[in-house]
Amino acid sequence: MEWNAAVKNKIELRLDGKETTLADYACKSSEAIRFHGAQEDIRPNFFHDSDRIIHSYCYSRYIDKTQVFYLVENDHITHRVLHVQLVSKIARTIGRFLNLNEDLIEAISLGHDVGHTPFGHDGERILSAFLKRENAGIFEHNVQSFRLFHELEAYGKGLNLTAQVLDGIICHNGEILQNRYGCNRNKTPEILLEEYKKSLEGSFKSKDMVPMTLEGCVMRISDVIAYVGRDIEDAIILKLVARGDIPREITEVLGDKNKDIVNTLVVDLVNNSMDKETLGFSADIFNALERLKSWNYENIYHNPKKSSQDKKIEKMFQVVLEECRGELNSGVDKTTEINKWCNSLGEEYKEKTSLPRIVADYVSGMTDDFLMNAYKEIVVPKSFGVSFGEKQKFTQMSNI
Image 1 (cartoon, rainbow, N blue to C red):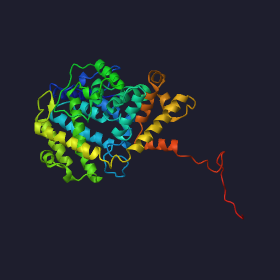
Image 2 (spheres, one colour):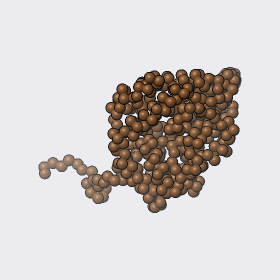
Image 3 (cartoon, helix red, strand yellow):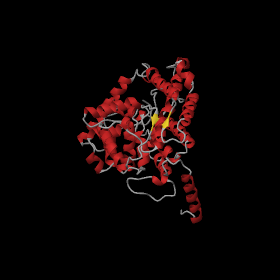
Image 4 (cartoon, rainbow, N blue to C red):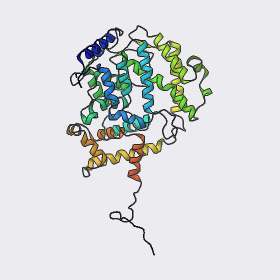
């Protein structure tokens, strides 16, 4: 189906008009850079990237990836897919108030966490330790998100997302909190690729990364805003903490409910960032946020009740990792899942990627349930059925 010429012209004029109203320091869609050449499409570049992201295989796996609380049967607890939506909404709200490019913010937000392992940050630490033991670099979920979109999706071709979106994705890190967020406008796609390669090796950590756009900075702080209060609500549902446990010196500044915490942080950030080329909080809000984040770590993320199954989870990872490595290394059975997956990415991937990294790429893409089922497949004996040969079809017999 072709566009009506008059309709297409009107759409393009309207889109161009919106671009001209953005803040001077916003990243325009016309500035987008793709690693493999521009593509003709009526959709603005960053808007187009959002479509590519939500139709990717790695995006669909968000649905069964843990945010913080795993192994709990409660449909009201936040999963990774909901966290991503919350980040996107908060970030777009900030971007709209500051007159930044919401399409770029949305694309970064939607794609930022696809590299997360099963069982969240605990799985990430286990995978990184595995790679370190093998002298094969490290594992960081933000770097893996970049890797998925740039190299692994589309059967090893990548999705050819814009450099600005990929940069925002790899630079996000919800564990890092800063009072001022600024961007490096001189950062080139070549520098971005170099940072990515060094990050895989472990010689350049994500905490040292600086986004090339202010939109990337918006998403980076929105990640913190989205989880810091929401995790408390989940912990209260699971009876790990009570609302009254939060220190008063924090709640008097930020509030004690997620909606109040989000509102306070967003309003303060916008108040202190309007018409500026950096983002930041007021001193009292930032100090309260730092204290709340530390309180979360002590009382929620490191809570003994939450970590009671950690040794079993680590054992499960180790068994699956070793089994996958053995299947790849033996070269005998090419019908195993990891061999079929590896072959689907093409010869270039197999030639340039170390065996431990292939294993990490494969296992990190698993959902929580997939990992547990893979473990059961390895360790739980299978029934032979009625005989050691083919299963027989029994008919009902009478007069016996």
